[in-house]
Length: 621
Image (tube, one colour):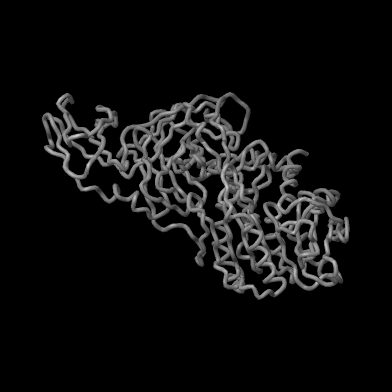
């Protein structure tokens, strides 16, 4: 099928083109239930007893005849390992094996047992592979075969849970259909369980087991990969609850990489979406080689002194960092408040912003942590969204210094809607000086699940005229905006075709229908302080939070306000309901004429040249 051809093409372009004949081709490996799995074995010339790198794949072992991974290509004899490539039960050469009662981990154990009985095998087995080839390594490790020495799982944890498929309560539709195209056939089961229920709880308990790791691992992830959240959690847990004998032998590498599987980008490539990361190219290969050489060959290469976490800083600096902690999430935070005029600033906003969400014309997915042949993958310019009427945008002034974040970004919005249900989608971007709006990460939340629980009993619909708080959490990331750039978010009611389009009628989910058009309002006032929480300590964003020393007098006033303090560039005036009464104007002489205003209480908003805003209430008499 076309989708699988794209995926497998990617696998053997990891290292180059060519073709070689396996030493043992299409051999059969017996399983404990009497079934047989098909495998190829590649043995370097002159090796009579060697250590093995095992790959278990659902994507056709035959493609490895074109190129072995980790830079080996077809140069089998120029590296030390024996490679064993096995088709999963139910896939390709192993498609005839019985699927009625088996476990992937048990199959992995039985493959290890077969390898250990071969006269060409030494005594150690390492495993390697991305995505599904990564998850099966955890299941195999759980079975504790004595020869399974170490593992290099990439862009996966093996965990299956409700949120694996329903991000923020919204089905990640494009990825699910891609998995169907690859032969997994999960759609009927997933779509039959759109709420968190016993099935999902059983699935999670049976697939998330960091406490059962008994071997060293090098876990490899990517900031543009859809599994990064789960990987950061799993790694932290593995450092704390894995077998005590190996808790200090768990490593993590996170690069500027996508999941792979579609398009030109993959784990370890320099090209990611529309950006280039030459300093990250092949980093996953070089670290995997050091890890495997150390554990399989006793190489004296200093691996034991490697810092536990190696991670890439996205943004303009493009550098690698290391840490020996189990978690690199920033402790400090900065708040940026949404404000009128599409602003993000360090003080509470005023007023509200509205947009329309039409299920028949949803805002399109442009890159990101996707997995679909029909979608781009990785960082892409979002500028084409700016011309749409179904999106609200908010951005800072041009930054005068760097802003760095590490962790999960949270956006709390106060939403009013004229329909019982809607989705709130967020795209976080870096506005470059040349006008590009490059995607960093994104997320979504279904309003019926705004209380952050996803069971049937937790489903609560909206009432027109009411305002509801909702939190949209974005995946773990590490990013630095440079001076001269801007921080910006896009807020919309949909994000298609990556995510399912909400019909917004409050009816059954994931059914055909035209749906209702929703008018969505984001409130951003003192009473409804919509804001984005950035994980980091950035004084440039904290000035307004700590307070700018200024004074406005006389207050009350009959005709004029005098502003005393730093040089403010513009001002605007709002009533207490957030309606703008005086349009944004230049503040030239620190004096403001308010004689035309009616008696009452108002809010004066002042903005510095750096884009920082402050507010002061005053009374007109």
